Length: 332
Image (cartoon, rainbow, N blue to C red; front, top):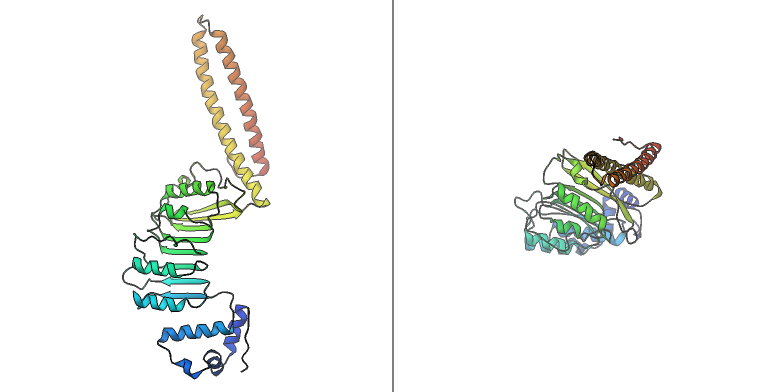
């Protein structure tokens, strides 16, 4: 077999080439020298093979999975240091088979060692008192055990792609506060946020969006992804928040949501003014018994009736606009 160095070859092509190789050819390509067969352990053998594959091929994406099982403490650190001599795009750390949790020291070491340019996945229990400034400074990140994540950690995330959190200590009010923070934030935070709340079931999903009409960033100069979409799985206590760039197709929907809120506000305003008119009529009745302020009360009542008519006109205009756009909304 002729040795050919392939640069930037597609992953599918690399996989096919390796599959077509015979066993002797694979050995020749991967272990060209007899002396290289003497390695310290099976893990080192795997790393040597990976190193030689990297010297032959340049894959577009390279993943690394570290199972925290037999390697603990200094053994884990030694193995990880040897592993990250290779360039990886994605790193997965699995500790599901460990009887106890990853220690704070081990968690700090792993997170500090993984390059920030990687996507990081950690499956395994992390102690509740764990904190690390680098925990969310990765391309994308997922922690299956996220009870240690505080609200301050959440709102401090910047320029991340996808953030996934397993079981957290957050409740509905935390998500509502997060949405308000995201709306007012001056910088990009994340492309998406996926998490499980403290409770498995969401009883009142409306509380998540309390006081919110639409999820749109106030600052559209420094941010590209200024629109947000919230998906709530009530029975699972699962929240997915996805952000989007402002495109032509989304502007009509956004305008419709603003009109819906305007419609609600006008409706409330009319109701309040009608209540006020009833009170004015009561006062007017009392003043008909010869009170010298009768004329002024009549003028005030007339002004109020005019305001009600004007609000009703605006209310009807917005109602017709919503019906014309055919948006599903029940007019009260």
